[in-house]
Image (cartoon, rainbow, N blue to C red; front, side, top):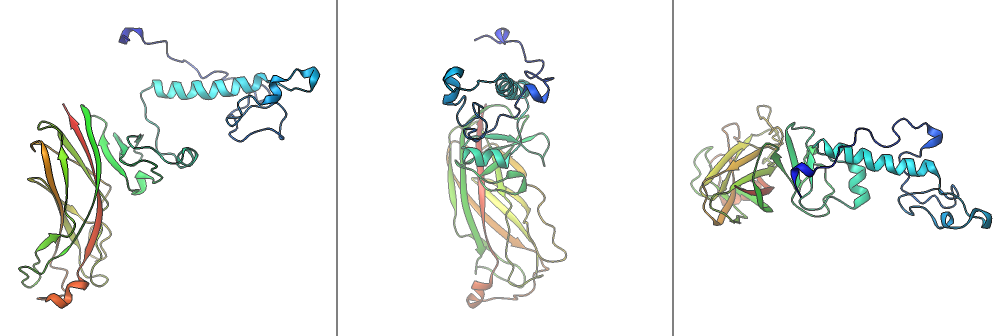
Length: 286
């Protein structure tokens, strides 16, 4: 197929000016059998009675049903012809049983970005922090070489504590096998949170390690009055990593507002802040 062979675009959805007596729009999803004799629906299409002669008790098909379904189809095609993406739709995802892996929806909270589902049967809303989505800038170019999610957790370790300084180690490190040495990893951390030892006792910054790269940010859901929660779910591009397995770990560092535990010992470990976050990865090649 040639670019020059693109068909004419739809100037108006079919039957745009049809009055209510001449169109059924939108076409109903539930069967209309037993409701309106001969009426069409997405469930039945044109029901069996439409194929029975009127003289033998049949009904329809009706021109208003043809106008309705053609308008719905052509309106959808016209919207797609603009190059626009549909946003997340809770009713639609319920109808289809959740978005499949690889689905792309426009972000309403991050203009110029799109969400890509990293899991099948995804029923969460990405613009309200739903899991299983990664944010991708629409100006990105290249071929998607891999999509993955990783659950990683962290907690303060008992090594090298001094006053309010803590060494942080990952409890559940993970990895991602990079396909290409020249590709870019688009990393999104789904709203990392932390639970402090007691309310109002500190805020946290996170460090995410992917291979030799390190990304830092502010954790969400901090409870201290001086804490700053993470705004949105930014996507971090990582370049310069070779092909092959890349170690992934998440660390949390606590600022000096967190003074509840001073020079802790091993008996305090169960009170230490901990978190689990979902990491979404899209590998994009040149």
